[in-house]
Length: 369
Image 1: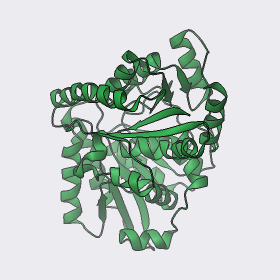
Image 2 (image 1 turned 180 degrees about the vertical axis):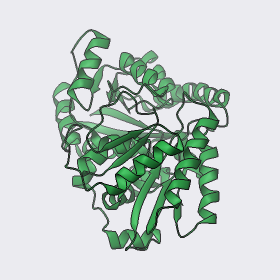
Image 3 (image 1 turned 90 degrees about the vertical axis):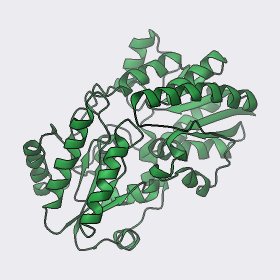
Image 4 (image 1 turned 90 degrees about the horizontal axis):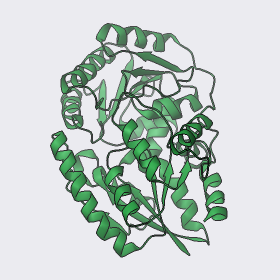
């Protein structure tokens, strides 16, 4: 059996990889290996390694680099430690293939190490464009080091073809995150209200804002502060805010959200990580989504949910008709929120896929590997 090693560093990434991991785990052709690192190990980000264990996966290696996000220098130092520790992890595990997803900065030392150690890399969700974040360069670098490619769309597949000068080993399969809407037993509105201590009669809003990594801390903090102030003024509405990710500036945003939630406990709930099941369940029940998370761009169109997308973090990605794009100043965000409040449910859009992506990938892997 060939050993396929999945590396996950964040809650969002794991939520997308989970169903493919299960397909590999139950296959007769492959042995699943799981390596956990990065923000999964941080209490301030929900210690989401616990979610992986709760889903029944055996974790083969925990690579704790003591991730530090207080400065860009600290992040770079963490990446250096990651290169060193992953060389030892890959040496012990001897994987035949390494699977990574997306564009997080943690991927650079991981794929660099695998590449130098001659372990073929399988990259999922390459070929996208996000001009407003350093993720764009990281994603493309991972693409150039990877041997097998599973982009979400045909446009992304064409981008990979242009970058690499070859269409070999490129299969557009749809985005993995959509599989959860078929495979995850989602919670209903009453269950969510009880679980999150919300009023079932109120409108709900989901807020997630990650730092724009090409902008200043002041810009990011101002965007969050202005948005929360506007959301707080909406009557008969409760807001669930999830933590920002482990980019530089994320901790400052999270501290601010915690402080606001203590001032307005009936209005704003702050949850470090909802976990995949609660997150998708809540997404289905909201009046609208606001922030700059990729889930608003990719998963929300599949549900027909209105999304206020703030700033340039997702700039360059295809925007479906449910997306209300706005710059980050308070006046513009207010106009976008009013539009979302007055809009009815959008029609579902299948640009990013129709689900069942994990099944497509595993069949291709069985044939090609």
